[in-house]
Length: 503
Ligand code: HEM
Image (cartoon, rainbow, N blue to C red):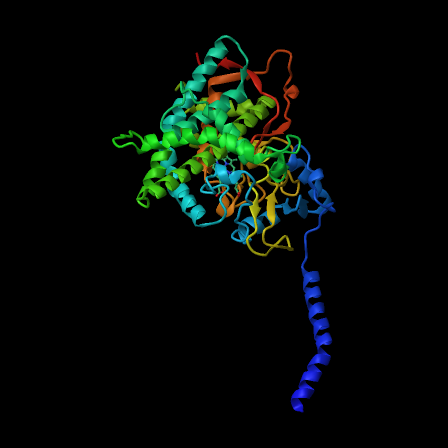
């Protein structure tokens, strides 16, 4: 009898229990505080709100909806972060939870199934490669070991520009600078210069960055290429680039594996082979090891060539527009270097004004204005809002570096703002993030900065620079253009006439 009473009471109470549970879950859902954002129509979401310069469109949206806002790009939820405080939440407080990368369409093949660093999800592969990169590839000692390559390549560019100065010919500075950063990284990687080679590796790499950066769908909506590409046939493009590039890289790696190779100086492939060789004994593993090396090489070209070149190009454009600042930088360099004929890396530590010129350039023109996107692996709170796993996080470093909340006269190029400031680009100051921060911070900071400083110092030491006849300083076009990869550079070429300073 007692059992029956129990069953009947349970049956009668069931709807009440159900109601209570439902209410509890509803409350919990309501308690979840999602970031605000513009309404997102079905299918396209907020795609139509992204213009040709995405960091600019995102900046406008954040002015309207706040520094943490939720967008839907297609069906992908993307949280846009545009304040130093919220960036700190992502990159420091919840660095681990936000350490994944979204897997771009097309990147699987060109990263040899995510055997790389930059596009690899947070995994054992990434941790192992990242360790090698930090301790071996871009350690202070290794970067210094490639010093002769940087100095030789910069010297040969100065020689070339000297000839233009003799014939008073205008130089397309961008073209020269990009060729130089490319040559430095190819020589560091392969051990040999590519001059005279029949392979147009630069063109091939350009093909890769176009696909990897994801800007393949529509040149007017570059940022969304990686979402629309399944429709527009990214796989065909990937196959095409891969078929051309893979045999070239395979050949270079195989050459490094040939017995009897006597390397006078260890290049990047030698270092990668040395660190991975011990773990590899069978043929299958050997191919996997080679694929891993090819994937890292592609990251190095993708991450290092454009970024460094863009920095030097913007610095020159800003200085030419402000002759007083250019003069100040030149006087510092020329006074210190004297008649030596070239600035060497030993001199750089003493050139304090040059250093803050580079810093200010990275503030006003960060080459990667929207940091490489991250993806959450677990729930976390950003700026007080609840963020679910598998949400893409996009930090607008450009908007933060121009926010009057952190910077006085933010639109003005003024290196002096860094003169008595401890703010640095190493990832501790979240209002200034040209290299990102946290576990995924750029591993190439030292190399990028030394190369940029050395090149800029020599351009300023060896030459005075004139704008072509008929132009005024204010005529120099400072518009931005989204590049082939995740970078943003100068839209129009910078043509300047060099005048030899040294006879
Ligand atoms: C001025 C020069 C450079 C700038 C402004 C720059 C900027 C950046 C930024 C913003 C990131 C994303 C960081 C994040 O997610 O928090 C990054 C990542 C990366 N950079 Fe750089 N970079 C530069 C030079 C270089 C160089 C010279 C190399 C190598 C040769 C390089 C290799 C990489 C790699 C491999 C990653 C991916 C790291 C990872 O996902 O773990 N970068 N860089």
